[in-house]
Each structure stands twice: as C-alpha cells, then as structure tokens.
Length: 510
Image 1 (tube, rainbow, N blue to C red):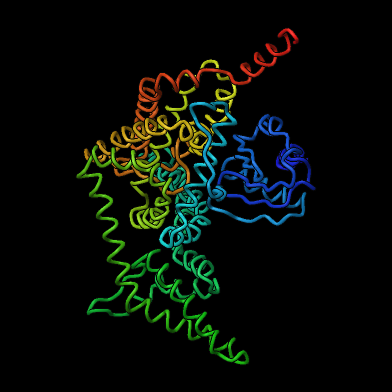
Image 2 (cartoon, rainbow, N blue to C red; image 1 turned 90 degrees about the vertical axis):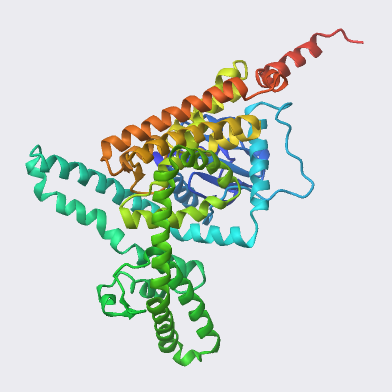
C-alpha cells in the first residue's frame, strides 16, 4: 500500500468512513470534506495523523495537508469514496446570518481558536463576494494551474545558472554540454506561457480552451514582426501574458455570441473561424500594443518601487500583504508576478511579500512561549510550525494568530520589518527575486536569484526571514497580549474541566 493510500485511509477512517462523506473539495493546502454525521468524526484521531498539519472541525471538515500532498490525497479519497472531487480557491464556508464568532479571550483552546479562525474566514469570504473580487478569483483560477510548471522551470533555471557560472570559471567543464539542455527545459514553457494562459482563460470564461490557445499563440509567433501598428512593427511576445489574457477572454465572448445565432449545421466551421479571425485581428492591432504598454509599465513600476523606495517600500509591502490576502486583493498580483518573470526571469515582489509568513512564524513562537500551560494550543503550534517555515501559513494564521487578534497585527509588523530589510538591499543594488510563484518561506530558497547572483540574493532573503522571525516574535511576546488575554491564554482548559468535574464528584451530597 502506497504512503498516499495509507494516509487517505487514515483520514477516511477518522472521518467516520466512506459512507459518512458526501463532498470533497481541495484547494492548494487543504481538503474541505462534507460529512453527514459530525458525531462519527474522531477529531483527535484526525489531528494525531502525522501528515495532517491542522484540523478545523465542523459539518465541513477542514484537513490541512500542505501543497502537493493535498492533491494526491484528494484524488485517492475520491477513488476510495467514489465521490467527485471539486477544486476550490478558498476553504471558507459562508457565514450564517446572525452568527457570532467565539470570544478569543474566554475560549483559548486549540479547538476554540480554530473555530473562531474558521468563522473569521467565512466572514471574509462573505465580504469578498463582490463583482471585482469574483473577477480577481477568476484571474487567479487562470494562473494557479501554471504554478507547478513555473516552479519546475524556475528551479531548473537556477540550477542551470549555477552550472553556467562554474563552467565559465573552468570548475565544471563537463557541464558545457548539459547547460544548453537545461536552458531548453527552463525556457521552453516560458516561451509558450501565453498559449497556456489563453487556454485557461477561455475555459474560465466559458469558451473552448483550444480556441483561446490558438488566439493567444499569435503573441509569441515570430511572424508578428511583419505586422505594423501605429507605424511600428510588433515584436514577438509583445504584451505577454496580459495580452494573452485579453485575447482569450475576447475569444470566449465572440465564440459564445457566435453559437447563439449560428445554425448547428454549419457551427463547426463558422464558430471557430469567426472566433479566431475576430479575436486574432483585435489581438494584433489593439491588444498587443495596449498590453505591451501595460507590461512595460508594470516592470518599470515594480523595479522603481523597491530601488527608489527602498526600505520604506518593502516595509509597506511586507506589512500589508496579509491584510491584502484577507480582503482577497492579493489575487491581482498573480498576473503581475507572471509578467515580471516573463520580462526579467524573476519577480522582485514575491520575496518581499513572503516576509509576511516569517512574521507569522515569529508571532506563533511567541504565543507558544507565552501559553506555557495551554497544551492544546501548544500542540497545534508545534504541528503547524514546520509547514509555516516552508511557506504554508494557513494553519498558523487561522488556527493561532488571527483568532487571537492582536498577535495577527504583531505578525504583520514582523512581515513589515522583513520586507523593509529586503527593500533596503534592493535600493543598494542587490536585487532579490523569485523565478517562480507559489512557494515561500524556506521553500523559496531554490528559486531565489537576482542581479548580484543567486548567492547574494539568498543571503539577503535569508536575512529578511531572520528579521521577520525575530521582529514578529518580539512584537508578539512583549506587546501581543493584554493582561486579561494573557491570563486566559496561559491555561489548559481541559485541566480546568477535569478539576471542575472532580470537584463536583467529591462535593458532599445533599
């Protein structure tokens, strides 16, 4: 039996068996599993499973497994239960009208804090149901499936860069024949990323993926250099993923419009031809130029922000990233990251924003040290901390800092100082970037690079993490709790319940 199968069976048994499951949904880090009978779920057994990073009980059980593993377990549980697995970008559940969140100062066990975190997350999702934020989630759905390939190509590009430097210095002459192959692997996907964006965008907006890809494929085609717009020849790749996004969305709308009026007998010929022709012409004569201006502006603005803004710019970016996540606005950054990677080979924004996770780790360690007698909360932090160090922040955010209130603010302060550290070195000329999006924390080290080389970038990034850890810890340890909140936090509710029960049992009977 494979490790994934064994883990899936353990989770399934703790959830009450296959007959107790009616719905399975997975996002990037966790499973949302709808159960028929919550009494049949053994929450303690679920938390005791080694690979489970966190659990949020409820009619929809939240089981945090981390990126990668969650997809494998979701597929295996779908096979074992014969339940269709659906994809989701936010694990929250809608808040019921008139519901109230648990009080963090009077209920500080791990379970109570997790329930409060789940409530806050549900409220956030309800607030995020606006047309703009729904649009941003659709944009995120277009780019999220590309992350595994971006990570793979980014790591290969980093390895190739190391070998090229060593070969140039005569240290690894044997690698001279390998580096061209690695370069092809690293750059092949990036040269055609517009096509994949077009296919995903067309699907997301109700069109045929292959038609979206066909229109987006115009952008990297070398022959566009013969097309002149406003007196200037187009450049292959001009507009990048932003142009591909515009092109595919237009193609989806044109296709749906065509299908409404075109007779079925000729639809197979007319619909795809009209779709590619109309969307293709608009892409060539409008979108490539417009998106080229936008992409160029993004590159100039992002580089100028950190190089001229320095530490203050990094401080603001690192400190505000978690609130952006809370309001769902972080999804707007995904196309920006992708554009910067396509232009320069890396995005300088991601390492700064990753400092928010460092602040969370430092704050959680401070909570662990302050809550010396709260065994359930300390156990939660112990199990979630390794994932937090690797950039999976949900267990710490929704299970520890956010439901406690003030520690979430002090965690943001840690992220701000970490971001300011990286921004300071950016202003000095040591640029720190990431060749892919997705990972953060320690998991980002293989993807870190910059103008001064991978070594210098990794040192600055590591320094930023250290600053984020220490500042998040200090701010939380010394300023993260009122006297009343600390008194409530530093207790073991289970011990209090046992003492109360023993006292009642030993009291004289009337």
